[in-house]
Image (cartoon, rainbow over all chains, first blue to last red; front, side, top):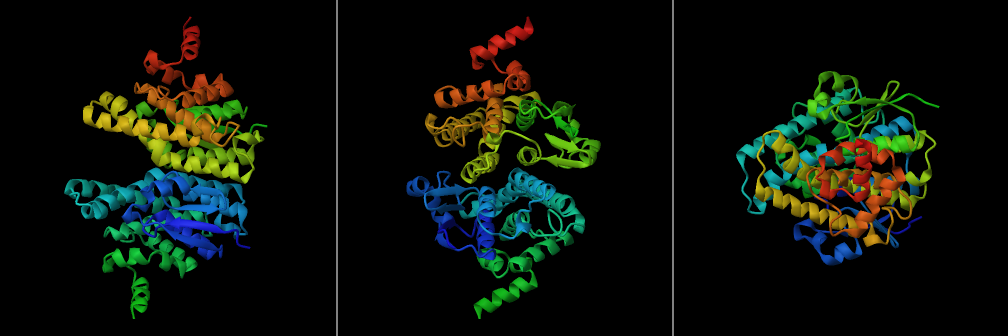
Length: 239
Length: 239
């Protein structure tokens, strides 16, 4: 049964991609409303008045109900739709681990990747100069947070996923954040075999939607950063 | 029934205060483990190994189970303890509104208040110079985010609380963030009557624990920022 979800999103936004993949993988029908961040469509008065008061993506609308913030949207969808429970398990400890990651992410993994992405990739395109010292400082932070993620959340490979043996909303959200670094020419997988394996698993479990959501990331990232399988699939779409 | 919760906290940390008030108001017994941020006790290897891998406060431990991130901890406590439902209602729309605020908060209200607090109050105490231009820029951001909060979350007084008519974990969390600005000499209530009324309600509904948790905030904030009732109560404790 479709309840008429409208998704407002931009595939250049990490949480937009994650939500797009989540809805698609779980066969929840939705209407697509792309909002082009590069054209500042999220900053228009109309968008902020009629869709999302925060002026951000993603956002969903279901009749008169509108909800922003991907973490709040996942939880809402898991309550309202028949979604396999592994995405957000009923078990209290698993749920706590997922909540802990999703809360930690904002001012840590997400902040550090976004700062690097803005400084190295976006700012030069907005005619703001890149500062070599700042780039190096942000790169070190990014390295540190990814090492921490691999060590603490994936337990250096002992955990297949953040909350144990099954993929959850925490994994999908983290994967889409981490993919963003590739656009700025930073390969998160170098020297991190467990993170690399985990990223491959997320992709395999959610394809073809993962690749569809990441098509712009793949096009913008330098070739040497993409895995052979991604490159192969990308070439097929170009034939 | 006490299940033996240990709370690791520092009353100078906003989410520590909120959790301390939440546990106390809801009569959940807990053992107190103060961690002095000013002495960098959260940075010790022992704390990070045995208590909180993130090296932050607050954190709870219950036998071998440890959980960080106040938002994850609230949800865990609301599942595991007999807590009045208004704190995190079962109703899906109320729950979504609370989740939306708690997710939005990290990179908005919390980030802007923390940046101001660090620059204006903490840095000079760590012998880092305050920069007048930066102070002004951070003050404008702080003004903007508090106006947005009053307008959008309290609907300029039409909503008594963030999710409607009852206090929830979103309100308590937001109030403790906003109180932090007072330490840095910034009065969030000036020109914001609805925010001021809302803050008074949160205090009244959770006292005496609210004042107990804010005792250092009250001592550090300039007098002209504190409400007459807070000053009166503070003077009583000094008699």
